[in-house]
Length: 244
View 1 (cartoon, rainbow, N blue to C red):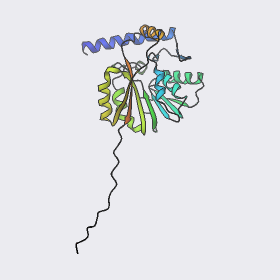
View 2 (view 1 turned 180 degrees about the vertical axis):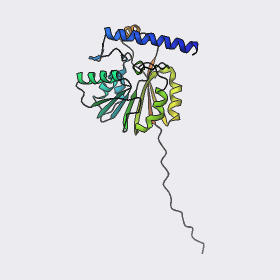
View 3 (view 1 turned 90 degrees about the vertical axis):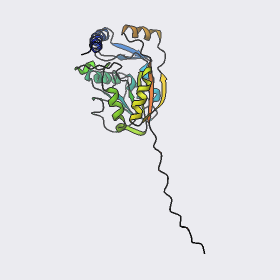
View 4 (view 1 turned 180 degrees about the horizontal axis):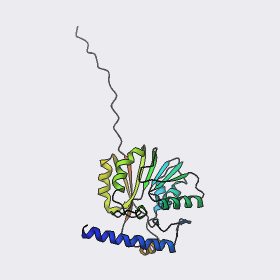
């Protein structure tokens, strides 16, 4: 293992331990007046993640791939026809179920799934908040902030679960724009919009500092399937008349 990789693994091992302690002592996060419960082994929303719901249209079928405590899924459920919230972590799934019940959400299903493994059907909107740190841990509960394969699997397989006019909204650091654009293009997805996350309130900034999460410049990247050019209508061959 290289020095940098060992350093990163050690740093994230400490961070996971530290975050669990913070969440255990402070197991709530208020978002737009709603008090979400956040379990010790679940990522606490620190980036105004609820704004992803602005891309949800009335009647959409929504897939939240990596739902965490359920903020994105709960806010999308206000407009969506249905929401399927999934996470590799059983703790996160139970956390989302709990918050859905707290807020009276009735059009949301929540299942354990390693990426698309347990996903069936197609969706109008797929929302994804991938881990920012490229590192892997054997314990699946240690994957809400680290992953080596989330992004590659997302772009390689999302087309199997996306309607022709569907959208994929990815929350990720802004300086990865070029990388994400190439990933999308390689799998038939066009980057249609790049939008910085809303400015944090003073309280949210201080909370981010407490969680050692600063400097990520979170951005929303919106992808849509590349439109195929319709085949030109076939023309009947013109019969040329012989001159008299």
